[in-house]
Image (tube, rainbow, N blue to C red):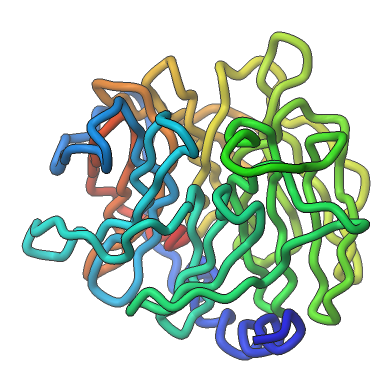
Length: 310
């Protein structure tokens, strides 16, 4: 499937999945909270690994399970509503996941140095694979706008999974016409990527020097403007989720927590887990369960708000 057709189809389907903005209610979290561990499994080859990139599709949670062995082998797991854990797609080579709104998985795939589209029966096609004639480093996280515009981060964490790569780590925008542009090349290893409920702000986190930052880019006429740092002293940042009010749930990997910030950058809550944390997504029957992934485990916490399914 050609890039343009993938994103054009996504544009028609993504709107109903844009953070449940039309049905927002309840109170955002506040204070010090803890999530409950609900699932764990062996990694593909037995090496220490991470669960990453949770996405809620229909009635189940999907996430990547990858290790730090040669090639960073990865698979996509499925956790259904009954708590049953199974392999959905073997050897996916994936990290961050999203959905196109049609029940397919958009995946940042370090194995292929690309962004891929997976059907749930495991068929893969490239969405975007090169920039200026070179493959990417190791695409990490991604977000799809309601109009089909794709944003993704490209750090070098799994660059060694396959030959080649870019000279810099960057954040990219892919328009529905297939044109790829650089949003930011000043973050060292940009990581988590999210959009505001209305799709008018892009959020990315990454490192600047020794500190993690959360950066916001106003989107004007579909184009991200210069980024502004909302939070400038994060721990090692990782994936993020956004609730229907626009609050950001930012993973701090080795601090084993998510911090919740308002769109203005004010901290309102902390959600703790008992291992290194990687990412989060809203799901469940009412969309108010926050699922959190990390070092070989999945956690959940019931909240009073809905949010992004990835």
